[in-house]
Length: 371
Image 1 (cartoon, one colour):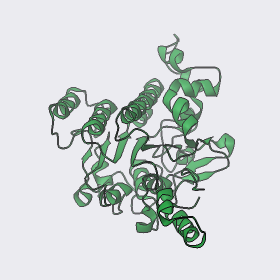
Image 2 (cartoon, rainbow, N blue to C red):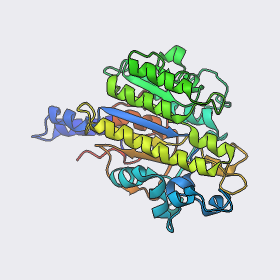
Image 3 (cartoon, rainbow, N blue to C red):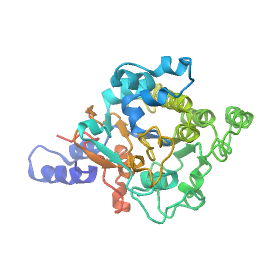
């Protein structure tokens, strides 16, 4: 797919050579309908569950010997029914109105390119657009590369209207907040600079929850903070990092891992429906959903990821918005996680690769081609 600026150059040439085609019409044609983009990541969610729902073998170990509630909630006889039970919004709305990448049964592969297959390198690749070998740990070291969020926050019309919320206290390092100046709520607290009683109440709510994992809060206060930001601060770019799928995966709690995926889907639906209920966002907003890394493919290693777990390089990505053709599950397409950065920018009419040539290209055909 040609990038927005390439299509513009072709159309501009037509305007100069073809009678009746005005430069004003060209300018209108190359502008996307979307003025805003929401990006959500689900940490360590396996493509197997995203595309096929609950795994029969892994469910066998949940709640023996009595059939637990989780089986009744998520087990269905077909993969299509299972995935709709687990993530009804992704399959009932996003997959029908947008596009999903990463189904190997259709020859569509989505993978991370960083070679280490864990969180910080995965997020850095997603948001900076390429895999940097210098980013090789989860240590709280500022990202040496400019993310698409930092870059957009400096673009005309986007200044001060880019916000990020994440269920991990490394988010500030990934976004290099001291350099970028981006407001990033990482759960400690969820709202970094509360202005309203409700924002302060969200931070109090987070403090009232049990600290189950060091540096990784529960997803609920993060999503509440993101929803409140959407309602009150009305960002043009909103990034939300959900983390419980990875945490419960590491714990080996397949039941709570599935529940976290279901709640993640519910959170995404609430973000989308809230946006569509607001005049500033309705019909003018794109959605991108992605995963920072995969997990093991077997009963023995599904709880883990990293370079020693081969299946952990596999991920899924999804895009929906007013400018994205409804192609559903993509066939015969190989993509990388780094393509998210240029895609998020292109969805709101910006060319990230012009400033970051190392960044991977826009996902193929996620923007409607101009006639």
